[in-house]
Image (tube, rainbow, N blue to C red; front, top):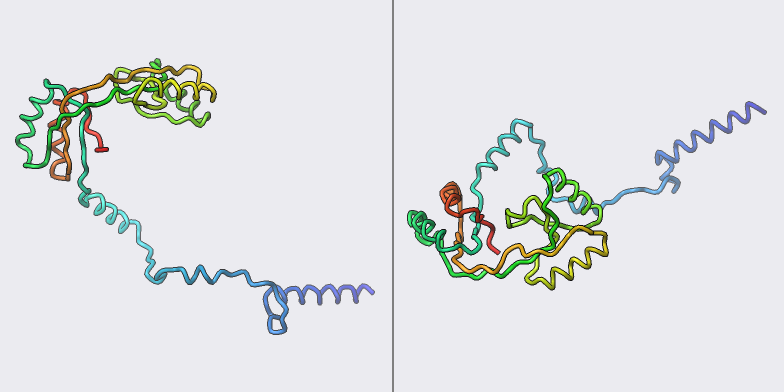
Length: 218
């Protein structure tokens, strides 16, 4: 009886092995085929894929880093007369058409503000708390309010106050509405196409901007 049981067990194992390996597919027996031929059909020239040695990869990265960057448009906020004169004098040496100076009115800007804080460590803790609440924040454009956080900027005080009320319902307790800057009238410097030839010369302008920064055009 024991011999018969062992023989049946061996035959069962052999049968399962033949079934699992697809040896019985000719008789219509075997596991279902798990394949996705459509993925192979979607491949685009797989024979062109090559493995690049690490030293060759570093050389390619160096070449890419040295490739010319596309030109970018930069501009300032409104500049006062004391800033415009020295800037114009410095820009006279720049290529024709590389800059313009236009009259502009910057509207007042109100923010939902948190700060000032004792230091960057406290700012980091507040940022972590806001992330846990799912509340976004942005950089301040007024250095006199640093270190601090802006939870949004608005064209008028009423809109900022409405946002503050909404944030209070989400757990924000120490924010307040603040005018980040009043309406400003002046001249705006526009650099429409700063390329690799002009980028090094931006350093010449920084001391003349008196804290105003060049930012991407909107």
